[in-house]
Image 1 (cartoon, rainbow, N blue to C red):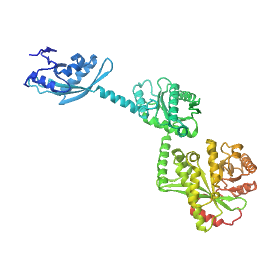
Image 2 (cartoon, rainbow, N blue to C red):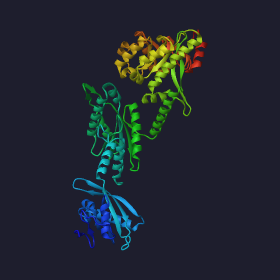
Image 3 (cartoon, helix red, strand yellow):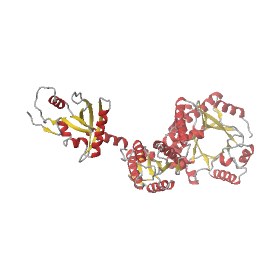
Image 4 (cartoon, rainbow, N blue to C red):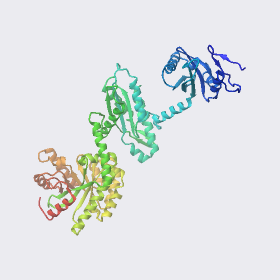
Length: 582
């Protein structure tokens, strides 16, 4: 008979390699059944509240070499916990149960997937259980590694958007209510990151992101959490012990850290960022909502150029902008936008010299949407490029349509606005050349209006684009002149034909001496540079006559006509044809 040894009163363990004997009832039969299982297995017996190991197979002995102590847990509290769990199962009506044991080893934790089930025992009904354990440590380590990858940004090793949310939740869960729960989330957007990617390539962009991440991390306090939650967007979670002043202190440190340029290849790149902040004073606030609030605030900061604190209603505004973007994309795809045409009138003769083409949008669900609202959305989302192309093609086609209707080439031109975003991202000269060619009209009948910001953003590219447009015989007008940062040098060096005085100066020049002086100065400057001038916002006959007497060449405004639909604009021109007075 093979040797056996007793673990507890009447308890036996089988040898590691039992001799093959016929299966019979009793302990030897059960013992052989245990060895037939491919995992660690044992028969447990309950004696009151105590759990004893009655029989086990070799895999169980290898897994739990210290028998009861190892099985129940080295820590006494663990042993009591598992004993109580097994006892609770015994008292339940369930036929089986499963759970996972975590055991701390010398080097790392071990994870065992365990099951327990009842054995039919006539001698001691309900007191014997079959226990099995499978080592899942490798699977858990792999899961942990995959989870770490899913929660981290591969480029910077910082938490990503999902990992950032979990970090916040974990921090909040460990704060006691007596400590208070005031904290801030800062969203940081690198404003010119796309230009670095476009001009220097993605590797340079990655290098910039890594450098910025290191600088941001060095600027934070111990306990603050930094994450990369988007391509060019970072976020910071910070506890506030002194309220808003702590958040402002962190913002100042971030600005200081990013103040010096970053060297990429042979270039020094200035890092500009917009920062939005959301505050919370309650541990029960949803962390995802706070992050969204900070992201909504940073979008406003990109436009204002300063730190923005989230205020109620911003998310509603952000939702509105998102809805507008979605509906605008659909409108562009389905041809739901229209052009309206505002007359441009020669102030001396009263003759209509052309029209300014202005985009108009009526949405079936949202109603009439002002260009002041949807143009910024288009610029922010990149839709301004297809929108600008559509306006150019449509304006040129409209002029050609009027020629065919009249049976001759009309003495009219059309003005089309060019966004700074389209100027930087699109091949504008090719688009203009194609629009003119498809419509069959001469370039001299097209005027491109651009703002001063389009020139300031990239003067070299602006000079190249304008030179290419002039080679097509198109005229160039500087729109909203006087509201930007133009200087005499830029006006002299660029091929500009026309200045448009902003309506903010024109509309009040009769009552405001300063505005009147500004208008006179612009007219004098234009005359010295041999440029024509168009005055916007003429709303009274008095203003029209005054501007005429000052030598202003052309005007537009409600005194003459608001922007009109295409058929009405053509009829308006025909009605005023040869009309010589204003």
